[in-house]
Amino acid sequence: MKEMTAMNTERAPVSSSLAREAEVAKSNKTKSASGKESRNVWLPIGFGFLFLILWQLKIFHKLFHLELYQLPLPSAIAEAIHSNGDLLWNYSLYTGSEMIGGCLIGSAIGLLAAIIASFLPKAGKGAITLLAALNAVPIVALAPVMNNWFGDGVASKIAIVSIMTMATMAVSAYKGLRSVEPAYLELMQAYAAGRFTVFAKLRFRLALPAIFTALKINMATGIIGAIVGEFFISSRGLGFLLSDQIKLGNMPIAWSCIVIAAVLGIALYYLIQLIERFAIPWHAAQRKQAS
Image: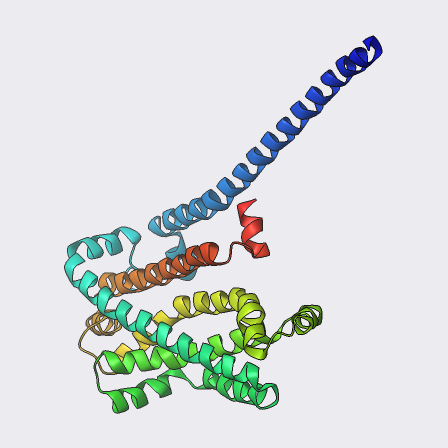
């Protein structure tokens, strides 16, 4: 009995030492992950501030031999945004509604096409390739056609963005739906799962990362379609204001439109990324970010 007590006494310090080491290792890992996440946030912010400072000090003007009317200073752009806040806000909402509406419609049509194509592998691959050819259509040729079809209102700009985003979603989603490991399919067949069950439980679930990737691309690039569409026939929106102010030589307001459009695209990109983090926490990329 005394021997057993002595053995337990010897083991206790060892186990407590191991527990302390594990705790220290876990704490170090948490600090390392926190430091890495902090660097990932602050490095881009620091680079952005450095870029603005160099711009404000006219370094880019000297490097590229630019005049102030060609590239206004950030302070002048900020002043233009402050002075024309109401106008820019209303026009941003107008262009944003075109972009978001077009992205959602185009992405939905592209996803539907990919789903149908995934059930028809032989014909579907050719159909997706044909749909991808829409990306080769120049937007400057597409915009007048859509304005002619749908008028000069919001509908024509939504149609332009929809066509621009449709192919990206179709190609990405189709690749995700068809990129399933054979072992998974064999397991589902072993359970006598039907085609629709395989699609709902396996293919669509594994295609979600590809679908979210396409959505992020569409949200970031859809603003281009909306603005270019407003260049041709429009009486509102950031594209209309940008084109109008360039003609008048009012470059600070023109650059204000560019800055707001960039911020809008980036904000929607990160919104989709946030939704993705909650929708597919099981994906390897999300687990890596969490750790």
